[in-house]
Length: 244
Image 1: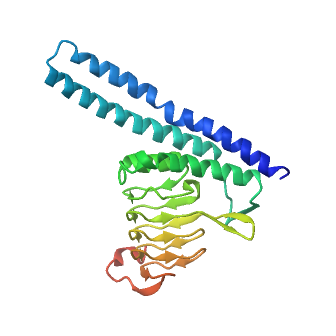
Image 2: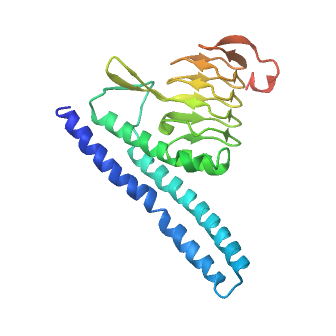
Image 3: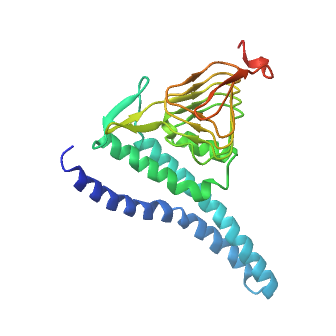
């Protein structure tokens, strides 16, 4: 791409302007809710007024959380880079990189509020809006499920607290995007790192703090640990997933 530095500078300025909208627009319904509830404090005693004000602020904040997650998730769904097949590669100075970077910034902008709703169906709903394919009874206890559009999670999967799920990497001046697949019943331990292109088999376990390298395929029913992660044993504790 020609004049990428100029495009990057202008894009950064425009993104900052959009961040004002992203953070500001959800305040509209939350302020409306606050005003509606706070009007009941008129004519009340000082103590009752404090109580009504406090609970009105909390309820307004909850409305704000949901509004920001919905707005951010929908924007990412519209902009995220689609990948057909195993991976998609583009130069760092490309429109694909620009779209990916915008989505990454939008996701990071949700962290301060997303952390209050993980794990919960609300967090799962946000990730689905942002492009993830998520099955039933999934527990996502992390705000670091990066590149949501690259992630497919089957039923009964658990992602531990602080786990980092990346669908991207940068190598030799290129941005590489590759989907990840978490098959039924697998478990990713707290603070584990999963890199692009990884497939984790049914009922498999990734230990706490493990690092699963790019394009690694974990067979069904195994336990992996370490940096980089290596097989420790066959996971005989979860036989119900081995032959499905």
